[in-house]
Amino acid sequence: MNATTVSPRARRLRESGYKLTSARLAVLTALEASDGHLTSTELIERVLALDPAVGRASVFRALELFTRLSLVRPTYLSGSVTPAYVLLPGGHHHHFVCLRCGRVIEVEDCSLLDTTREMEQRLGVHVTGHLVEFFGLCANCAALPAEEDS
Image (cartoon, rainbow, N blue to C red; front, side):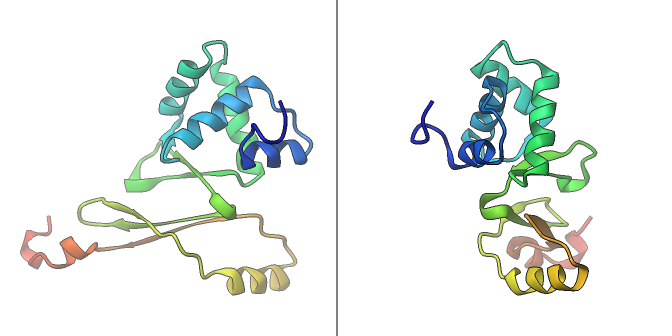
């Protein structure tokens, strides 16, 4: 497999010294083909559809590795106890979650670069990615009368 046939995330995996195994590539393909918000159960189903030889343990090992490399992050939207795994394009991902209807809105822009740099200097760390979730009322719910809030 050459560099032009793999995704940027797969190239990053290889450049970090990891092999592009069929299991890792199947997990990446499934994540990239989705909206990037998959539970482990949904991900396993999609991976098995791509490659029935990939086992559950391989999916979880790939998720663990991808999390360490800041390719994905687990998030617990809508109070779920089961995480959804989200891709971190450019090392970050942001959501706005409506507390009334549960709607999740992707926040595309990131203005946290200065905050990240300040934190790195203050704490002596190197930030490789971040996941930010904002909570409140979406425009539709904010326009509803307060008595309709249950």
